[in-house]
Image: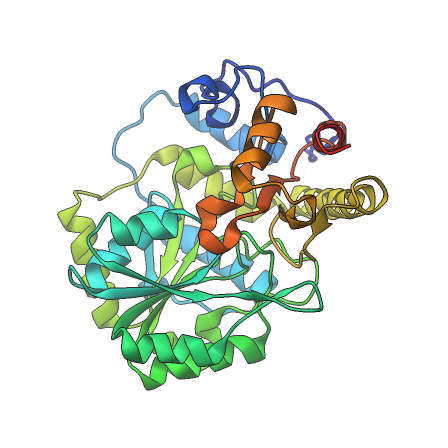
Amino acid sequence: MSERNLDFDKVIDRRNTRCLKYDFAKRRGMPEDVLPLWVADMDFETSSYIEDALIERAKHGIFGYSEVQTPYFEILANWMKKHHNWDVQEKWLIKTPGVVFALAMAVKAYTKIGESVLIQTPVYYPFYEVIRDNGRKIVENELYLGDDNRYHINFEDFEKKIICEKVRLFILCSPHNPVGRVWTAEELVKLGDICAKHGVIVVSDEIHADFVFKGKHHVFAALKKEFENISVTCTSASKTFNLAGLMMSNIFIPNRKLKHKFRRELDAAGTSQLGIMGLVATEAAYSYGEEWYQSMIEYVRENIEFTKKYISENIPDVSMIDIEGTYLVWLDFHKTRLSAEELDRRIIHNAKLWLDSGKIFGNCGEGFQRINVACPRSILKEALDRIKSILY
């Protein structure tokens, strides 16, 4: 048996499949015929090994309460060791139905209503929701765009906000969505030292850890023993293998007290066993998905380079921020001098494109757009042609 799903140029019709990306445009205020490159899932068939594992499990015909045993953990641990040089322990692991769900549980577990939670903006918009909707206070450490066309951390402001706002919890996005940074070990150690100094717990969303094109992903908890003791590390095969709809994530919490608090919130939310298909898919992905993963990463890398070249040659009023990680490209439209509202209007109604408007990632995201480039190149080119058409 060999991997069958390696044609990433293949265009697959996802309409009428209950697909959030394609089938809910009208309900979300978009033209029905819009081309969607917004939400972070890929337009690629996943590994054929995962397909086969799911089909084989479905043939059993019984889908009762399910759980996994030690072999699942061993497969997961092997992936973490091979790809991120991280030695994990089985007693650290808690499985949740998605990383955003885990973020919400962490906010409830480690802070009280009215307390402050720190994020680095512009940032993945559910970070705001899990803080605000749980009655906590959002504190922003705004990243800044340097002369090197990459975003950087204002460490002085980071520590000042922790002290002045009495921050108890920091949600780290690593690699960072939407600005595409892969934080260096030095940057993460500096952040971690500040958090350890002030007793701040770090929830590290590392869901895009397998998408690194420049530099190296460093697991925050692995950098120092002190960081391990204050960390909740959120991982999943969902982005890497396009399995988001199966609602399965792996959360590592080495500190027993922190793990107990997190577990208590899961119990309060009524969460116990997860869906069998998510468990089966994750195990198959990490066991047999290496060839598919490596081929997919190379294709996405080429799409990123294609996007960079296309914009440079055809859309001079748009700048592409250097992307080191994720498959989400951050585009700067400030040179067009269009307001955020007018830019959205042209993209949605003139170009018939559904991107993620920069303003949903925080006020400092205004004038930017996030585009998902994990799609067949023909679709990507069509999207870029449409952006060009509304500016020239």
